[in-house]
Image 1 (cartoon, rainbow over the protein chains, first blue to last red):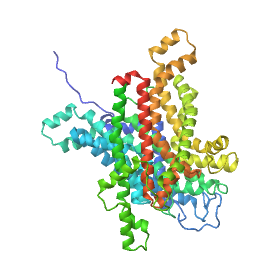
Image 2: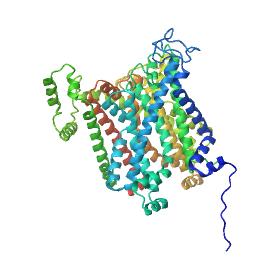
Image 3: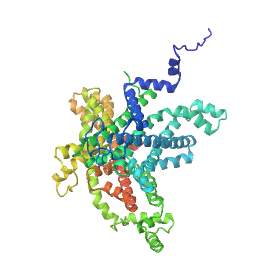
Amino acid sequence: MSRVSYQPLEYRSRRERLVRESMLWGSLDRLVRNPQGLIGLVILLLLVFAAVFAPFITWHDPNIQDASARFLSPSFEHPFGTDELRRDLYSRTIYGLRISLLISLVAVGVGATFGIIAGFLSGYFGGWVDTVMMRLVDALLAFPGLLAALAIVTILGPGVRNVGIAIAFFSIPSFARLARAQMLSERNRDYVLAAEALGAGAMRVVFGHITRNAIAPLLTQVALFMAAAVVLSASLSFLGLGEKPPDPSLGGLVNSSKSNLQVAWWYAVFPGAALAALLLSLNLLADAINEAINPFARRRA
Amino acid sequence: MIGYLVGRLVQAIPVLFLASIAVFLVLRLVPGDPADNIAGEDASPAQVAAIREQLGLNDPLPVQYGRWIGDLAQGDLGVSVRTGVPVRRLLSLSLPPTLELAVASYVIAILIGLPLGVIAGVKPRSGWDWLLSSYTVGTLGVPNFMLGVLLLWLFSVKLGWFPVSGRISFFDDPVGSIRYLVLPAFALGTGLGAVLARYTRTTVQAAMGQDYIRTARAKGLAGHVVVIRHALRNSLIPVVTIMALQVGHVLAGTVVIERVFTRPGLGRLVVDAILNRDYLIVQSTLLILVLIFVGVNLVADIAYGMLDPRVRRR
């Protein structure tokens, strides 16, 4: 028998090596090659840019009543028109977008972190911890998101921060459930057994070894939950349980546009369009992430 | 079958129990003393103490919980602390409009979603399939309250075809009631229709590849008979479950849509109660909503078992 010699793979460039060998870079590469993913990413980046640099790309204070008249139709000075209190709707929309993005990012970030940690530990240890945890999750999932959020806002009172807490709280059970399933499928893999055989402690096994392999599929869920969080926070603002006036929010703008539909079509249209763009980009991105990291979801051409 | 039924009922109990505890705790976790809130700012300590005693707030939590559930079982939902109106009366006024809206949304969803899902499932990658995708993407981008505002603007304000706000009971005046229901039901049912269409498409497409479809075709049945009697019938079971799970979202959606169209209902009741800090109403309403949600899912599970003998045996 001849000896088999293994040659290291040769790559044409550093970039190719990264894409081929790293799961993260490979997924990212597939993400931007997918037209859906690229469109979602570009729109989202534009919106994030607008939200981050809001003070530099607007030229009116969102809360100051400085326009020359109420209900001015869109113009160069006021691209999205003005509202019933002579405020610039362009600034209000951009600042509202800022709040929506911030809430969904922070709330889902916090909720996902707690949910994933709880789910991982519950799945890893099993036993009564797991049973109790999952019954708790069942009970929490019995509340549809908005109702759970309503209950939490009842406890904490209306306000942006409390809406964020409500969203974080309601995303915990779903992430816990998913992370647990993910953990169960990794739990008895060879590499886990190997790490355990080498004497690694539970924390090290779970967060050092398994997390690296189990986290990617949860990213799709993060994008989907961010979209859900945007809808939820907009709905709560729409109900008047979100930010305190005069601060703007996308849901709040749509709500106040409702009483002025007869005089100002632009009042509902522009904030609504910003909301739609944000939701669409997040949903497109979620789909594309799913396709990029999950070989089974990849389209067979 | 009896065993399956009992098993499902028993499984629902811990969920309901934990949910009721969660709802119960909502009222207790509110910062500050509820009695202070009720008594108002310039109440004497004696008045506050009297209210505490009256509400039973001095008892240990398990005792309070037991009393609440006991009263609930006897149909006593308590009294609104703001207006003194029994919560039961408020609910009996608010529940019918909300149920009406929820049912109408389901009707709209089924009218749009089922045919679209079936056609797209039978003809994947056709124009219908493309229509389904655009419809789904559209509903993802437009939250129900925004769709509601757009419908309100176009059909009520601009065209004047439908009333702008309000509600008439279906039993008093069916035609008038429907005029008030159409737009809210569309606003809520469109998103639901997209969910329904997507699942129907997937299951019908999977069913169309099965051997029994080939057999049905081979024995010479007409195309529509094959699709409706054979493919659709087998694919409806998971779709029913998914639609039952959506009840929670629909009930939550009514809260928002009632606001858009200024309709009376549970949603208005809850939001006003939150803003007025009238917690007993929130507590009872949330519990009713969870009960409906768990109940509908239980019925769906049982229906599932009746429709599909394979489920029972597991």
